[in-house]
Length: 300
Ligand SMILES: C[S@@+](CC[C@H](N)C(=O)[O-])C[C@H]1O[C@@H](n2cnc3c(N)ncnc32)[C@H](O)[C@@H]1O
Image (cartoon, rainbow, N blue to C red; front, top):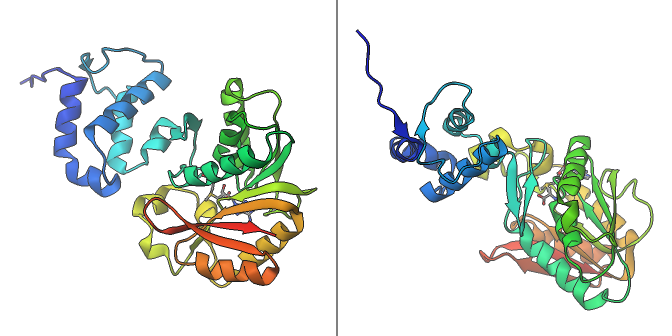
């Protein structure tokens, strides 16, 4: 006996998939909407050579090597959407991401905005030397290079070689949006240890979650798929890691320079006290849009 399989459009398949798998999808992708899923499928299809306005009206045949089938299979496993498509939006651009780098978070856009204000205010008529420590996919450094308020001499550093390779790929992909007046160097370094010279602006979104104490509060999808190195620091050396970092920031920051560091809502007040002890005269904790402590603003 043969069973008759009806052929449906991708839209019909997607809607019933979303309905049938809703519980599993929302456990892995909090707040996921059908609209977002449709956009990501469109992006995924486009990146796999299927660029069609009528994609969702076409019959969907779930053969194994169909890129859309692979998309649905990864979705069922709970792979982050950005690692499925290989791309993530940050600020106004699309960045390539792999499991070697953190998926950009929206709160980091605030750090970029704060840095942009500083550049606009103080560097319209002089070159600004800037470093992004722990650049990952390069989002902070490259987003700032897309602005045109000043000439930037940028260093993008990371302890991970894989991250640096990806950041350079993103520079290549986005180079047409970046003015030739800016320059950038990619350097492998533990914080500022192998970095030469001084800076006007030192930016960093470092790993800031305590490996043991905070593990329970991290979403299981983040734990399963995002790189440990981008997320966690050892509990026992957490404070000393930041103290050493702040000391080197103090040494490498020009007298009228500014440092902005993203951090954990629970520890930023304590880290602010450490920064004051190290010698920074203006230390401010800045909140994100959810009202949580999120950044340190340090001036000498
Ligand atoms: C939270 S992720 C931030 C990535 C990217 N800047 C962003 O905002 O999405 C932290 C980054 O710091 C890097 N990192 C971890 N330890 C480091 C260290 N000791 N020195 C320099 N970079 C480090 C990781 O490889 C990772 O790319």
